[in-house]
Image 1: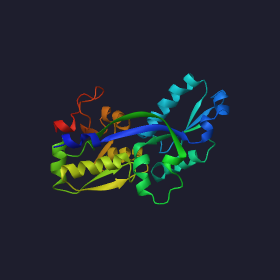
Image 2: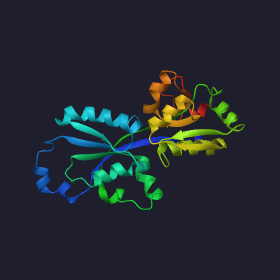
Image 3: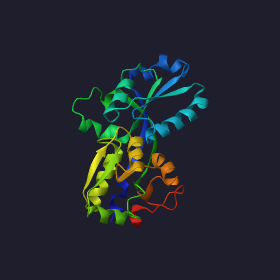
Image 4: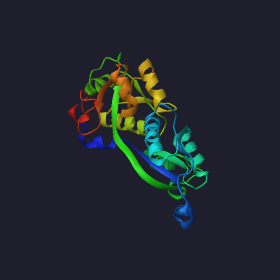
Length: 246
């Protein structure tokens, strides 16, 4: 049932910087960059996938560049608050933004009055990572696989959590309930970590969350993973079936 839609359930992160003509001017190129610490803005709360990947990135960049890469969380408005902070910074390459795919594609359609324009105000540096999502439930929910969850959702009103309205976690959840032909109430949180915390506590029933944020809780038995949205099983979590196997 899910083979045709599995590619929709992905997250993506990219590194971007303030866009300016000065980036390509001879004067800037002649300067020694970097000659001071670099700030990496994570536009979401700590503990989520963007934060986890951003901190690993900063650790790896620091010895390569010979300067400290300092992580700063600026969450809110689907990532727009952090993006605005970067847009207002000098266009000198010392303030970078780790942006999610939803920020670049969904936010311009969700927020009518944005102080920034992602196409105009930023210059892309690199796509860093993309990956599948994992559909997980609270361990006390009486389900053992994806079909069990769908069957239960057809008999009672379930809810699912996300990292906020319009986030990749939200869209993944909506795609799942549409494909499954079920109804579920969306509970938005201020970040993926908060959603997973309430999933563990049983305040929400399920979540289609990102792999980096979910893995530790799955291995510790704090949440139960039902399926991963990749074409093949993940080497790090080989016991979790794909949605195509469901």
